[in-house]
Image (cartoon, rainbow, N blue to C red; front, side, top):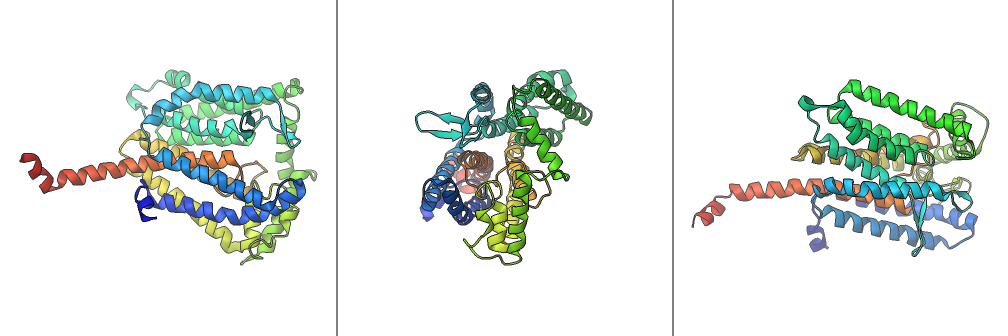
Length: 397
């Protein structure tokens, strides 16, 4: 065990937080899986447990493999993978398939292994690496807004437009994170305001086209409109039912919770193992369980900022922030939806909710952050060796 741990590089605290979140996730996922197995009528509760274990096991293999790769290689990989992601997003939009009777226009299926995944999740991660690549080269003295539009904003908007028809919440999250990263990198504020305005205009044009040609994207605009209007007090819909059951679950948990596996609302709450798993956690583990989870994400945010601050290059700093902050931000959105601070978005709870694509993308992001911190350790080790008088003496001899 010690030998295996000694081979791990990078920030030990991030490793520990990731492991704690993964281990803790088995309890609510296994609990919620009993309702899922009964409602769908396929498989057994233990089969969902094994599936979640497989997703996490593969996720940690991704972390281990990625954190061994020098992070500077992701600079070029983001450019090479860009056309691949564009093609995958186009294929995803064009297929118009369904999974379990639901709109599956955001999913694509691998034929041989019959595994479905969301290209939009991988596209979000790629876009943050791509953004860090461009913004790390930003020079205030030689800044050209026209040049940044062609080389940076046009590719960003291309990805966002391809994601938007199937997943508005992910599009909004990515756009806000890219703007945040640009602000951190020192991109001029007046131009950021223009980009933000262009994003709003693009969204308005998209909605107008969807209204003019309703058959091209059936039900998507109505779904967005219903979620927002119901959040502000509209007619009762399925989203209202989900929120009401989530609030009942949270209220039932009180301070200490009803106990592991004893949730009642998991039998009535749709997506209890994914989108609304936070409500089940509070019902079973109470306020203390929810605060414990919140504390873990805050610690993760703190360590990500530390890794970024200590990075020796601008690309390393922006890369850590770009792929790390969205993990915590997504967690806060998921928690906010459960307590009705935000409309229903469909965002999962990172490393806790069931679902392969979300877990693997999060693990890939964590692996990149650990790669940045591992480089810092290598530099410190080299500095210690250079400062060692015995090393200097041996070189002289």
